[in-house]
Length: 241
Image (cartoon, rainbow, N blue to C red; front, side, top):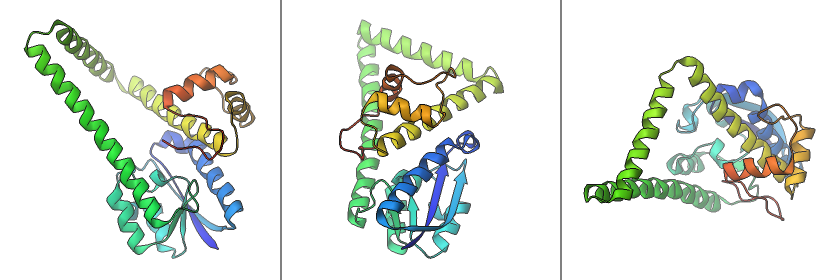
């Protein structure tokens, strides 16, 4: 079956480094070999948010206008909005490399659950803050201290953001680095790595350095995976974030 590949990264840093796109290409390459897909064209959007409807992005619109099935590495490369996904299902055919045999019903359910979880997280955060405010107003010392600490952290964060473009750029680079590492590590596990040592070897083989420019160790991989909320499963593919 002839297909077209679509890749998306949210930041220009990811696109310029090539690592974010590279990981997506690897997902699709592996799935194409396993499923017998022939990738005849590739389209990529760099620095484009997933909140924008896929048909309103330059490269994505061209991919879906091609007429052949569109393949993405992960569902969130298309969109994180269940309405976007549902709308595309009605007018187009697309495949997800990490779930190549998933039906449209399964993909829709996956999108619904992912959006619901994000909604629940937002609700829990708001409820926790409201409870903290109420306890503080009632004179709860611990709550007052928590609010004071939170305000102090917010104040420090605002101060850091106001120090100039230099530090803002560093923050963006750090965010981009975290996203790149997440994609690279997920890709290593998708390819069969079942231990921290195997992931470390995979990252070294792909010439992806640590933040300090060194080589990866199992401990370093473990810390990064814990920070990103990634887990190794013995029977890949893994369950993605």
